Length: 207
Image (tube, rainbow, N blue to C red; front, side, top):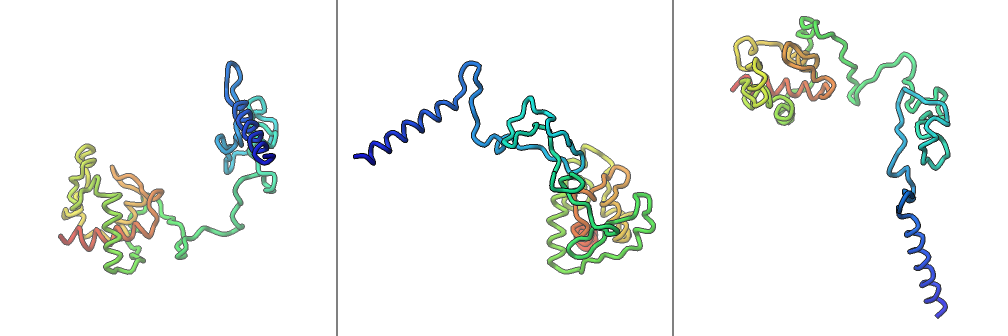
């Protein structure tokens, strides 16, 4: 009997507690763990070090201002670590960042495709081509994609001027852009671009 009464009392207390959290009139109500819904926006480089900045609207559980976003555990008060001095980033395969500028097409033409040509690579290249290229260049590379029809002037990859282009040239144009072709280096990793190049040379231009 005592256990039943205790459960009943706890249930009523729970209902009362939840009811007290609801909004009414000028009272906006309460949130449980508000930062789970309104997380603090952390910037990787731009740091606000004033702990009271935005305190007038803050709901943070640590009592600091809403806009305070510095990492007190980082010696530079940043939310990212600086790279080790005198180092450059590499991919998991050891590939260095692409350094050539957009106008350095002649140098790019001499770069060989580092991805080994296999049936699997061709298949992956086809998928990537469909995702990133077919919209403008068309499924068959003839410049007749839906977006290409609107933009106009899209390259026909089967045209005579494009058949003999070196793989490095095609890679560079995808990376850096040329004419109406926008740069895709920030959207597509290098190894995937090389797979697209393989597909274009081995399938599109041999159909």
